[in-house]
Image (cartoon, rainbow, N blue to C red):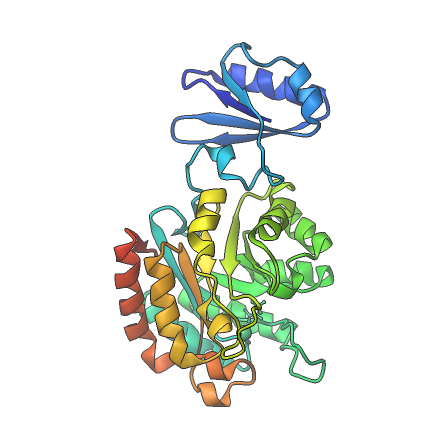
Length: 341
Ligand code: PEP
Ligand code: MN
């Protein structure tokens, strides 16, 4: 249930409603918007309904949240967008974020060179995998702890916040030491233990849509993180499996407006994994930015042909500044401004 407080509601009234919600074993999730405070009562609907909160001091309305995902639902925020702030960079709302970097951390030079390019071009965050989910167990699996160390060095030098993937709860602690945003990869979207753990960690999460997942399944996965009290979740469309075989995955551009209708969470698009080929990456990026995405996560590399992982889809570092200019213009079409420091 969603308890919408009056604009005039006092802190005491909000606290009193919260206490009553909790008295029936439900969780009260307080969402403070610019004008309204909404208390999401997460638990047995019947129990909450029996409290008869309509008419309680400070309460305007009590309405059911009809979707199976509650905290991720746009209903909870009455149409307001979530804006996540990471070291001064804003993600969501009127802001556009450019997250860029290599698929995987390969070496010190490759990582630092790329981080410098991202910083120089006005990128918002730096991405790089230390733990990689690879289709083949014989492929390079990432540098692990050494990769995390190199990411920390890139951050120390450029000041760029780090986005890196967590695949296994056993690596949570070392990943959290470096990550400003934990990426949950497409293959782990429904790894519910992992989602709950990153939820409890409180670290912002970039949640990638599973290869064959519906948007509702993506939002239910986000709910696992939100339920632990972690409100900093970004949804990421990265291409899905369809009958089409002419390219790697089908980038679901329609997911952008639909997710924004269904949820208040920021929507990020990954054109690299969808395209699978670098010559498609710019056009997909422009389309996503113009369609209102809150940001892009793109793979770049100093020498894509020599990349250990995902080279064919990586843009060369040398073309990144020009790419940023183009994407910035497309984002402006959707009324958004690039967020960097
Ligand atoms: C990646 O970001 O490098 C990656 C493996 O992404 P996904 O989980 O979307 O395949
Ligand atoms: Mn990759």
